[in-house]
Image (spheres, rainbow, N blue to C red):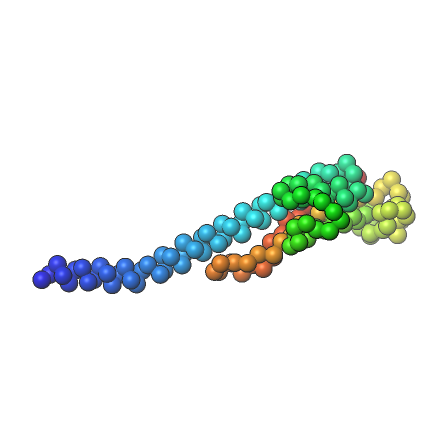
Length: 150
């Protein structure tokens, strides 16, 4: 008689703990998926930054390197991934203490630093929407690289 009561207790314990264990397992899988995709986007942004280092004005080459790193064919002028957003921006600053931005394309400083003194930066950002299974509160995953060119 005692054995039958133990079986019922075991079944009750399983019924109470199984949903919690399942929820924790799915949350870990969800978080791992978000982390893996974020690392992939950061790697793609680094690939774009490597191209930007040698060809900072060639947006198409930077974009092609990013898409190739993500395994997306770079065909046509539209974004073949549809949900991948790529942003490449350039900025120039005078060295400290006068960190005033100015026009990178002409090299005309707004501040008092000369054209040989300015620092040029390129920022490459790659983002994709993310739909979580359970608990990860992210809607967009992003990879970003800032690079000093000069």
